[in-house]
Each structure stands twice: as C-alpha cells, then as structure tokens.
Image (spheres, rainbow, N blue to C red):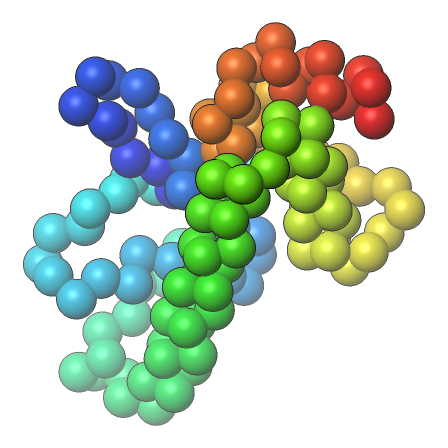
Length: 129
C-alpha cells in the first residue's frame, strides 16, 4: 500500500500495488508518500541513468498511475459509500484477472482508508453487497 499522512495524523491510502506494478515514480529526490508491504514482496530500484532502456516502460507506468489516480478521485468524490466499496471490489477483481473468487490481502481498515470511509461503513457495505 502507498499512503500519505494528513496534517491531523490520519492515513489516506493512495494505491494498492500488485506484482509487476511500478510505483514510487518521483521527479524529486524526496518521495511524497510512503510504501508498506502487506504480503511477501520483492522490490527493485531502477536508475534511469544506469538503465535507460526502462524509460518507455516508466513513462507508460507513470501515465497508468495518473489515470488510476484520476479514476480513484472520481470514485471517492462522486460515489456513495456502497458504490465505493462495489467499485473497489470490481477493481480488485479486474486486477486479479477477473477471477470469480479472489482474496483481499488488505484489512478492512486499509480498505476504509483507501475509500475515505470508516471501517464500520465498509463492513456494512460488504454485508449489503
């Protein structure tokens, strides 16, 4: 999970990354967000100066990340709680290869922090769905 802490100390999860995803794409020396693994994870740091062949893939990943962030902003800004949870489940299903069954590796607290909801609202929405 990639997250930021608000001035009041509350956590906002910005993204969940799966195997093969690129993240931490920053133009500055200092990152504006934090990353934590919620499962077994491997990480590779790439220097574009040392490995320029990655530039096209990096550019594509950056565009994908912007698109995903815009979609997430729309979900949070314009959907009801139950619609947010449903959209989240659809997103996770899609990223799992549209499997009819998939396991959520993140906690309900993580889901709540991702969707800007309370844990209780996430639980009620999951029950209704």
